[in-house]
Image (tube, rainbow, N blue to C red):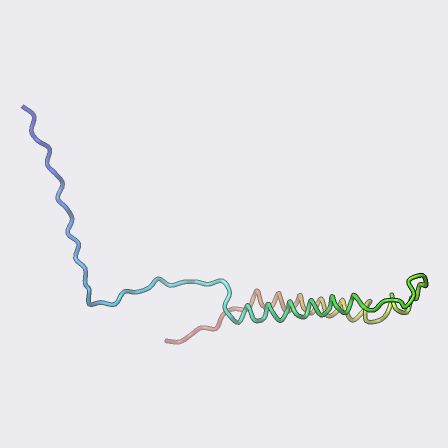
Length: 101
């Protein structure tokens, strides 16, 4: 005659309701400070693009090289855009400040 299978014993779980629960540590990639610097870099890049767009000729049929090849469009605007990209790189690599508890 076959013997009946024994049911495994249920594990007992004890919980301590008086101890506060610890939240898991969250490692964020960027902090608020990083996003602030990223915004500043984006504004600088947009300013450089605006400077590069420059003005327009009064008459579309006449080519004025002084307007098209002005110092603002050819020299200053690319430097401002590169400065904006440098700020973006700084914002990405900036480490968050450590908080002492």
